[in-house]
Image (tube, rainbow, N blue to C red):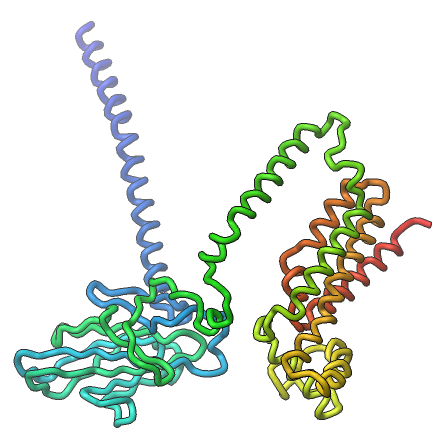
Length: 416
C-alpha cells in the first residue's frame, strides 16, 4: 500500500516536472516564431521600399557600383534644366562574342552607343520613361556580334531634379561600373567617375577664385578664437550656476541692457561699414534675381508679374525703396558699386532689429536687467540676423517690420 502510494506520487511529480520543462520550451518556440514573423514582415516591407520608384535609394550589386560625375557639391537645384552626364567605358575582347547582354540601371533615362566617337551618332538603344516610375527596373540591352579587340560603350544618362547616376553589369563583356569609368558633363574633358557614396570634392572653382578658402582651412584659421570664446562662455556659465540661489548677481551691474544695446549697435555699425564694400556682389541668396527686380522697375516703370523673372514674385516694397537709389547711383557709379550701395537697406534693418529687440526686452522684463541682457544677446546675435543683411535681399526688411508689429502688439497688452 505504501509502495503503491509512493509510486502514484512519483508519477505525479514526474508529470509536474515534465510540464515545468515543457513550459519554457514552448515559450522559447513561441518567441522564435514571433521574431521570425516580424523579421519576415520587415523583409517584405524593406523589399517594397527598395523597389519603390518614389524612394530615390540606389542599391549596389555584388560587382557593379552606382557611379556619378565627380562634380563639386552645389546648393543650386536641378529642377529647371535636366542634368545630363556621359559615361564611357573602354574594354578589350580576346575572342568574338555573339549577342552579349549589358544590363543597365539608370537614374533615370539613358541612351547607349557602341563604338561611337561621341553622342552625336545614332544611338544603339534608347530607354525613356513613359510613366516616370519604372527607372529602378533593370534594362537588358542585347549587343550585336563583337569582334576581338578594343571596344567602347558610351551611355548618356538624363535626370530631371537630381544627379545622373548609372549602374552597369555585363558578365559577357566583363565590365561593371566603378571608379575606372570616365564621365563628362557640359562638353568638358573626361574625368574619372565617382561612387555615389563618395563625398563631394572640394569647394567649387568659382568660389575658390573669389578668394574664399575651403571650410577645413577656414576652421584651422579660427579655431583658437572659437576655443577662447567657448572657454570663456563655459567659465561664465559655471560661475553663474554656482551663484544661483545665493543672492549674487551673475551679470555685473555695469553691464546694463542700455549699455549692451549701444555696444551691439556700435559693433553692427563697424561690421556694416566694412562689409558694404568688401563683400563681393556674387555672394548672397539669389542676389542677381533681386537686382533684376530693381532694374525691371527702373526700365519698365511698373511692378513685374511673377512670371517675369526668378524673384519677381516677391513683395515690391523693398525694391520700390531701392529703385530710386539705384537709378541715381547708376549715373555716376559702376553697376557693381550700385549693387553694393543697395546694401544700406538690409544693413539698416539689421541695425534696427537690435533696437527693436532691446525695446521688446525692456517691455517684457521691465525690472529684470539679467533677462533683458540675455534676450538682447540672443535676439541681436542670431546667425541668420547677422549674415542675411550683408547682401541685398528682402528678408531683413520683412524681419524688421515683423519685429515692429510684435513690439506694438506687446505694448497693447501692457496694463495702463
